[in-house]
Image (cartoon, rainbow, N blue to C red; front, top):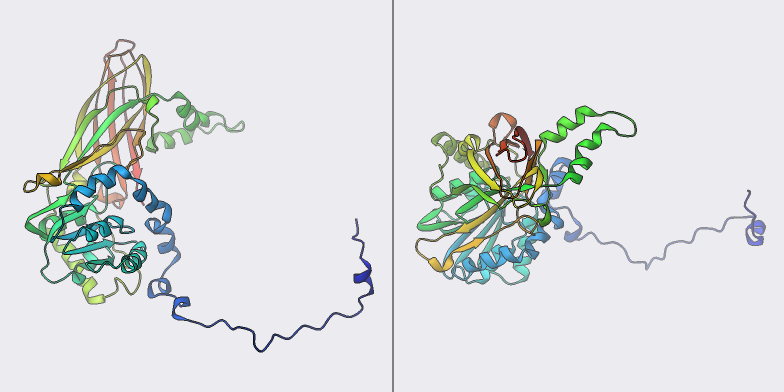
Length: 407
């Protein structure tokens, strides 16, 4: 339908002349705050997209994690007059809490651009005993005070599957080269637990769903789904067994970097010192290879006790962390985690190839082997699982290989 013109539009024969801009109109003045920083000038789409740690959503959980905060406060109450290095400091909340605890010197290191904001926040809050550096530890070693040793190295070195976190390499180097004689890495212990999960609805939605997608059979998709781990919080009412401790890593005794790995690490540090590019632009991305101890991985056995008559569709793995000081027991803490709770580490679940029907009290015995091979670029962690019932309902044994992808 044509639009009816109003009388004002119909009688207008000539367009109105454009009004000239007033000579007194305010002009946009190019100030330093509007100019791109060196990091922004050298940023690429890959670096911006890949810097997930710089997103507020990635850091807000740290602020709201009261359990973790209460655990680390034990450390912050014991740092007066001491030095602390925080690897993977993120937005710097814990780093600043340590500085406020009257530490002699606190240094926070993170490869994310979020440290640029942390630096400003620390300055605005008048913290003089703190410093933030952007980059991986091997890239910024030359920026640390010469020959400086630390009383504490704060680093959450544990990944969702214990030894599959990239910062583990930095933590091992710092433990062996940057601590004082009585210094400590915190946390220094972490354990992997396993529990049985019953969730038929989730299995239907994620796996059996592919049998009929708008009339199409997509059976090959099922195999892809079966190989992927699930990263999600597990509701407590879906847990159908008592949890079982599968494996514990003690950082005080964990195998360190090999001589060759240490040489490569320090070579990268020397190259970074020569280039001086860590804070002037995005840090140079080197091909990362997991430490030998992560490549070897670990194998563990577990026994689960069913708490009800049910069918087990998944096994879920989750972490806890602890710190034990030999010289200062007052600084000890345990960061306990349970499935379904808000925690720093999300549960990792694997779907069993064959669901396991069990009676209450029946045992499910199994094994898990976890490794991070170098030939997969260090970003893929392989999880091999076996599980079998006692046969009270049916004697079933199942096994599968699953893949966890880090980015």
